[in-house]
Image (cartoon, rainbow, N blue to C red):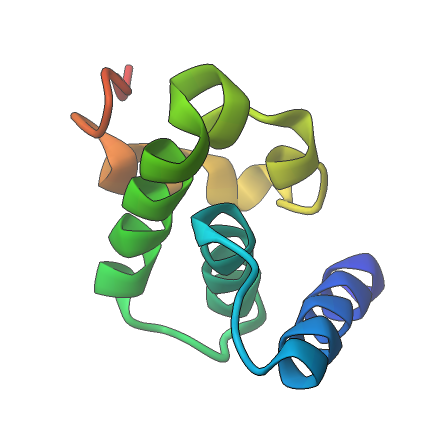
Length: 93
């Protein structure tokens, strides 16, 4: 969890310096990390993260980007996939 917290904090600090998210990709990653850390327990935010990632960088560049998944523990991946089902062609198996 330390890597997740570190990444979450790094994005928070960048946003605080700039006064806003750079783009939907950054905001989507932040929402995912906040959900995993329990800072954003709302599953609507989880779905919003999927839409942000898809709308900013598409299916392969956003939703399937290795940097997005690098910080997500395997135990959360099924739940994320379930909530992203139908976004930009994402299919929960």
